[in-house]
Length: 219
Image 1 (cartoon, rainbow, N blue to C red):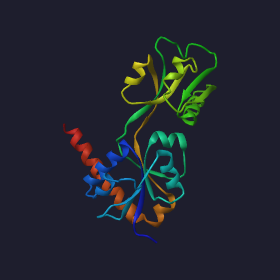
Image 2: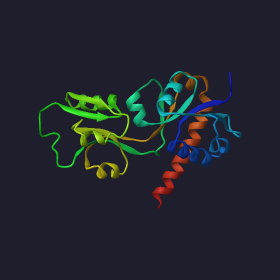
Image 3: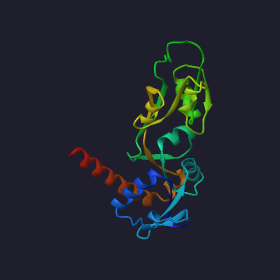
Image 4: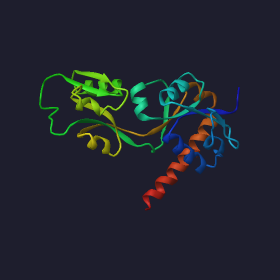
């Protein structure tokens, strides 16, 4: 049984913010900051190996137990689902799921069946099912803002941070479907097998988040 934990982290901005959190907690993240082509990196001064992965794969690796922990956006969790513990809201990567329409259109003013374009079809179906609305959800892989412009959809559900991209394409958000941010997730079996090690890691992260929030509140 290895005494080193393994954590999968979404590549990109969440990785950079995760590294900042780890370094604030005293972890040497030099190998992760300069990864080259390698995808697995060991933290020299803490029993933790970092696996660089795409967001949906983080959940897969944690679910199957090849990684004990993961850091992934709540948007991916809401879309993909999975069986694991979500133990900590890390606060960073904050954004929201928004329902957006072309400016001047009236989405809720008509009873006709609606077509919704989204990169997140499962979340979108669940969102409208909770409203009792039967909609046709079209999955888009690229720029979902194109769908209403080209007449493919009546509205979109997408991740929104500032809303600048929506505005640039003549779209306006009309409803927030969910607030999302990065989460620390843990494999269910690992939580039992490596409870002390995982608890220590969670405590380190939580302490830094508390300190960060304290500094922000004092500004």
